[in-house]
Image 1 (cartoon, helix red, strand yellow):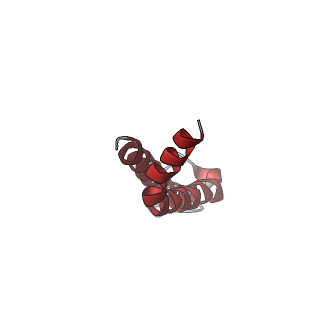
Image 2: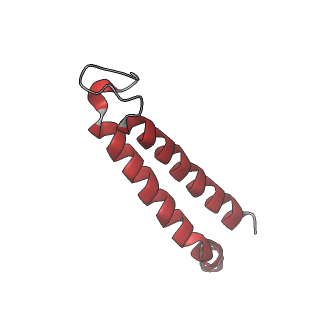
Image 3: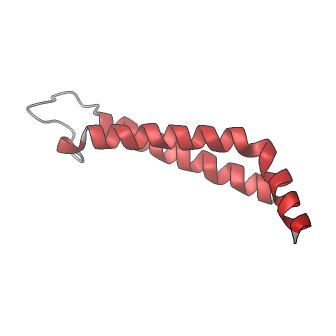
Amino acid sequence: MAGGADSFIEKILPYLPYMVCGVIIAGIGAFLIVDDAYDFGTFSTSRHPSPWHHWQVGLVLFIVGLVIIALSLYFALAQ
């Protein structure tokens, strides 16, 4: 079984930078969502009349980060 673990690491290693970037991007997105939790789901409040909120940018970053992680795992394991 040791050979199986080595081949798994050899498959994942070239895609590790993409996975790390995906985790960082998703983490930043999650932080922005939590940072703006008081008006999550609203588009204009008295405290923040702008149409763009941190939670919207955070949600986009979170989804992009998850897609990067998923695609890097897909391409790594499809070899």
